[in-house]
Length: 385
Image (tube, rainbow, N blue to C red):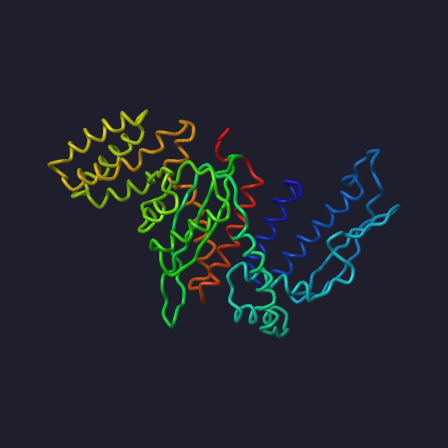
């Protein structure tokens, strides 16, 4: 699809869904299918509309209206016609069964975190058909199998490993509790980002982190030169157990946030933040050590707890100095995985409270798979050549 077509179609679909909600889904799908069929015809003819060239295989000959009844509603299609050759849209098979559309709709709803009960209700409201729990479960099983393959796929070389944790609310034994979501992101030898794995459990303790890191290792992860993360409880101990020889870089952004807890008065906050940045922006580790000593002494009387905290913690943010200078801006914080987690949060917020751990793992796995595929087809994130 061209840039013009993408912009126009997506804008139109967005407006429909915004104004009509789920009721406008069949209209949005119709627009997408009709545009795709026109592009399919142009490729088959090897010529755009009104284009003259020697490779042309035939000629566009208008459209044939067709109403296609599916379980997600009736689609108003305009089937492109041609003359001087045979053509039928490759993806719109003749005799398309409505059951296939139903299964696709159910799978899409599962990707977006809708429970079985809600799927049944939505389908009934959209098209007036009852959907059995076995239909929903069958579509769910197919989707889960694909996501499980992705979660267990073999891994390879990874130069930088970013780790982070966040929480989602899940119903468990009659209560709503916080469930830990562990995410691993890597930078491979091609310099591109890749979501390496996810683990969803009821705890973020050392055992969870250790199991998660061991799983990455067992799937073939190798070549890691640096691990970047915040100082999550249990992560440091698990890292020492599984990857004892790999250096660790503590996230600068989180260090700045942690420092705020040790500042005795509000008037000092801006100055402290500036001083910590000056340490991390030093041209080398030796200069950073020198500045740390001077600045910690500066706060010995006015903020003794802060001074001690600086000496005990800021050096954990110096590891990046041992790596190429053109990598510093990307490896001294865990911002890349933090941004990923913000996108996950944006997508899961529509669910609110997950009915169980499995549904949470399903949705987040689908999100990570989608984003990771976009990264792999996109540009280089970090030049590691």
